[in-house]
Image 1 (cartoon, helix red, strand yellow):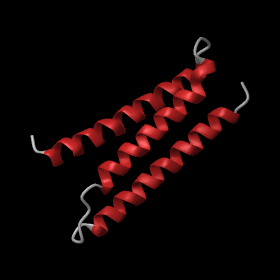
Image 2 (cartoon, helix red, strand yellow):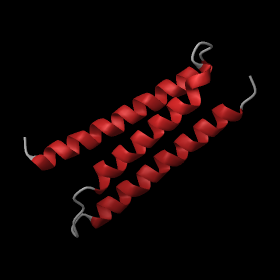
Image 3 (cartoon, helix red, strand yellow):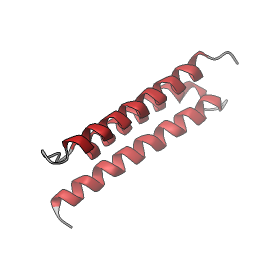
Image 4 (cartoon, helix red, strand yellow):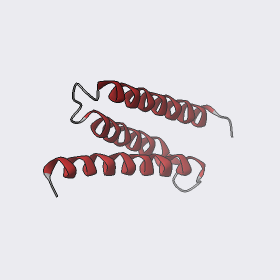
Length: 95
């Protein structure tokens, strides 16, 4: 496997891992046993997910792919905004 493919797969893995950890944190928010760890887990997952998304979408952007990269970047920001809204709602809702 070439180094470029390896770094792209690593970025994809980081994004997926971050999303998985974030999902676990969201689930832990409702769990009685892990409720105290929900916020740190969600923040960790969100940070890893954002890093992975950034690396995956912005790595190796050339002049020819600038338009596609901008579209992907907008979709990443929409994803991030949706995550922030969901996490904010979950942290502020009354039980």
